[in-house]
Amino acid sequence: MKTLRPSFEVIEPSFGSSFYYSKYDENANNKAHVWHYHPEIELVFVNGGSGKRQIGSHVSYYTDGDLILIGSNLPHCGFTNDHTGNKNETVIQFKSDFLGDFQGLQEIKGIQDLFLQAKGGIAFTGKTKIEVGKKIEIMENQLPFERLLTLLSVFKDLEYSDDYRILNAAG
Image (cartoon, rainbow, N blue to C red):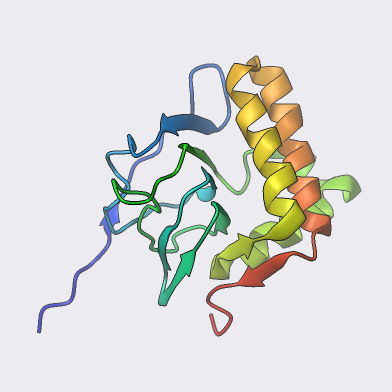
């Protein structure tokens, strides 16, 4: 039996930014079905709908949207298709060291720990999914500097959240 290998995806930051941000209406993410990996960490917010998530060796289903943090080089498929029924999907991708010299600051330590946890993939639920989802969607209309500040705020919210589950707990 032939095993399907994930394809390598090249990520380019958005113009004038140190990270990639894109919002897709409904099921317009044409890469959503491709089994792939990349060195960038990925944060995905699916607004509404129900679907399947496949991250590493983990397969599960979500309802009423999804908020996922996927670690570096962790193979995954997209989360939406023409049956999902979502309003939109927002994808944010960034290198683990995209904060440069700020990485060493004490205020960033918890975010670094969050990125390490994301190596197994993290699904956020409840209030976290709702509140962080709103912030992620607001980023669409922000200038690059405001977008970066909002992203840092999102990371802090995720760092302090208790509404999460590690998807590949065994590594």
